[in-house]
Length: 98
Image 1 (cartoon, helix red, strand yellow):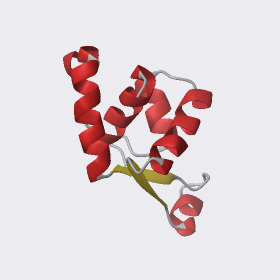
Image 2 (image 1 turned 90 degrees about the horizontal axis):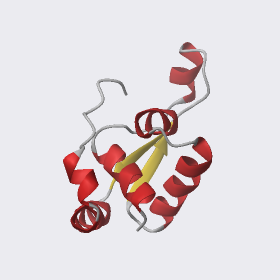
Image 3 (image 1 turned 90 degrees about the vertical axis):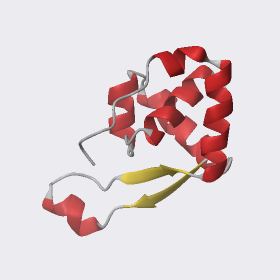
Image 4 (image 1 turned 120 degrees about the vertical axis):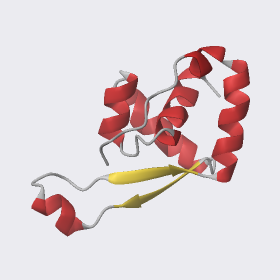
């Protein structure tokens, strides 16, 4: 797992659950975050669900896809944190949005 992927997984585990929020908190471009989210889901480290259309419509924005770390994802993140100590030193604050 790359540092960028581990950082994205860490962001999700800290409550940043949709793409733009993850882009915002990590400072990574969408072209890095969105493909990594797909790969993490394909690997079984994340699960996702689309929000209800009426919620997005009421807020006048596109639907969001919300991500959640799976058990395998928590285990992979723990291993990545051993490898990339910088993640441990700078944990992301839990989002108050979502």
